[in-house]
Length: 323
Image 1 (cartoon, helix red, strand yellow):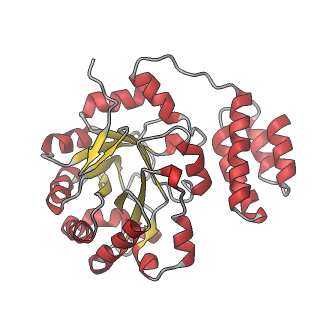
Image 2: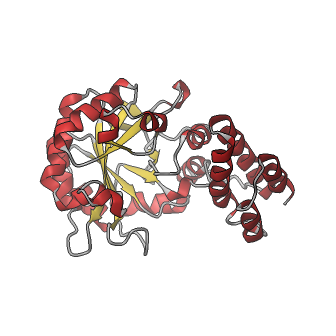
């Protein structure tokens, strides 16, 4: 059987694994990354940051990029459509010590795409190439790009963009098997990932979309021949999904996680949130994070409903332990 799990080389950087954790806006914050690092994915990212905010040295933007030395290798992701500042923004990420810089061309939300950023760049692949080339010229770390397979089903252009990204010097391209128009609806279509991989000469092609377990990762590799897998929503409430996927790919039995173990992991996540955020923000974050962990638990709906109204961190801990 072909070995799907292996190191992944991006230019001169060798990642220890080709199973990667995605940058998720509003989700993959510093406490999230603290939880993820225990399982040592090949690479994980901070949430995306805007080019404009980076070059203004916006304080809030730099806080999004918090990390510690134990988190290497780690990636930063920028979003924007101004090629004239792309190099400067990429250089700031490099100077902060990140190992990889990624260009977001996949975010589907209107407030991002309205100025041609995020998945809006799928409509202007030549501009995307110019942005990537400017980033590549400005830094020594690997430059990568994350896209959707097209703006809509009438304009699937993942193969074309793969060639453009390769010509611009990108080390890897991640392709989400949905269009911008789909958002997160329907099933991911991995066939454009397979076609892009067949078209690629040097650039690494990483598959993304509907990777929620070991068997789905195995199927992605088997059907597309891609070089790596980027796990997105599958990481929410399952920081251990890397371990789950690797054990499956290597033919090892799964580790069963009991409800008590899941509750304990959620409490550990909560501790990291409260150490990082002020109390009011920590309570808000807890409400969001608890939904991830508790979604498949018995009495989950009641628990989530009660947590959504909680006003005290001590009450939250008590409810998670005994609710």
